Structures are given as structure tokens and as C-alpha cells.
Amino acid sequence: MIDHDPGGEAAGPEAPESTGTDPSGDGSGVVPGPEYGETWVYESIIGALPGVDISERLALAIQFSLFEAGVLVLAAVYGLWDAALAGTVAVFVATVGSVEMLRISKLVRRADTPEEYERFVFGSSIEVVLGVLAFVALLTYLFVLDPRSARPLVTELLGPEPPLLATYLTLLVLWDVCYRIGTGWWASVAALWRSVRFRFTPEQTRVLARADLETMGFGVLQLLLVPFLLDHTVLLVAVVGHVVAVAAVNSLSLLVLYRRTEGIGSITNLSL
Image (cartoon, rainbow, N blue to C red):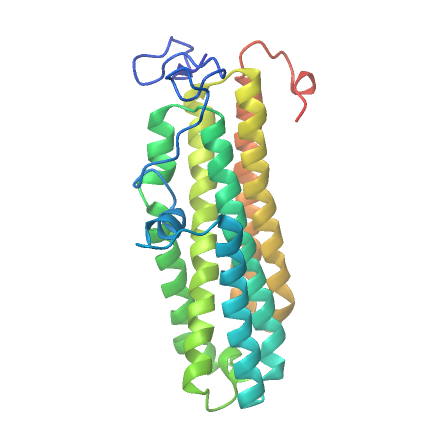
């Protein structure tokens, strides 16, 4: 049973009783696929290309292979091997971000959460807005503030005269990372809002807790970028601060989620 509001009043029509036995609602027991507008933007892109029907694994393999091939080819052509390692780590982080977005969305849907929450976390596309804000902030730093320092990051990676194609690929990969960061922000905030607003059954709580832990885990993974930012304090503080904030918000979400779970007296009574 899912309840609205912290006061514990019974849910209205927006949050019907959830038994967890037949997510399809038609007796088939088959979970229907999400409609467009009820997915992350990344998910919509995978399934919306006309005439293209590929599995998620293949899509992820293509994503990593194309970006990584670009990194290695351009490193060889322009002699940018110092940048190749940083590029590979960024491509890896972005690809794992894609994996986590798919895993988190499946967990949320598996939990049979209220439509209001799913619309809030997926349908708003706010993760794109947050990704754009992060990307613009990064560009402002790279091309306005950082050039005034003794060792600008762009010069450090791409040389004093950055090649056109290498710069293009670098910005594309950075956008990919920023979009995943924006998604992490939004998934965390939406999770906390969900935990405060609704009450869930023990089974739903187990699934949603896994989703929160996945979100937190992806944030921690982004610390792989830190070694390349040690001489760039602003970016270092931004990345570490982002990871700490995501961890804190998700931890609070988990705490509230467990405390408000129906029939659970303590966190120790509910194992993942």
C-alpha cells in the first residue's frame, strides 16, 4: 500500500493500492514498456530511432566503442597520448552512467511506484536542464577562468593550439559526462521527494533502496575523474562536492524511506 503525505492519510486515486503481483494490471503479469515521455531522454533516444531496433547492451557497446575509438585515433593522429587516458576515463564514466540510468529506471518501474513520482522523475526532462547548466558552467570555467591560470586544462590536454577534431570530441564527451551528472542530481532530489511524500510496502522499499544505492554508487564512480583535476581547484571542488551532495541526499532518502515503510519497526528488519 502506498500512502500520500507524511500525515499517513490513505492515498487517493493518484496512488492506488499496489499488490506487486500483476504490474500489467490486465492479468497477464507482463510489465508493459514505458511510453515516450515517461523515460529518461537517453532511453527515448535508444528506442525512438526509426528503423533501428537494437538491444540495450548493443547500444551501450556502440556508445563506448565509438567514443573510445575516436579518443585513440585522434590521440594517434595528433600525438595527444597524455589526453588519451583522461579521455578514456571520461568515456568509461559516461558509459557506466548510461548503464546506471537504465538500471535505475527499471528498478523504479519494478517497484510499481505512484504515477506522480514516475512522471516527476522521468517526464519532466529536468535532468537535461541540469546537464546543460553543468556543461555551460564547465565551458565558462575552461574558456574564461582557467586560461588565466598557469596551467590551463585545455592546454594541458590538447596543447597550446588545440586541434579542431580533438576539441570537438572532447566537448562531446564532456557533455556526455555533464548530462549524467545532471541525471544524478535529479534522481537524488526526486528520490528524497518520493521518500518524504509516499509510504511503501517492504518489497517496494527494497527495490527503491537499490535504486537509491545505484544513484549513489554512480556518483562515487565519478571520483575517477579526480586525478586529472588535482591542479584545477575549482573543478576538483565541484566534482567532489557533487559526489558528496549526491551521497548525502540519497542517504537521507534511504533513511526516510526505511522509517516510513509500512510494517517496519527498524532498518535492521529490512534487508536488501
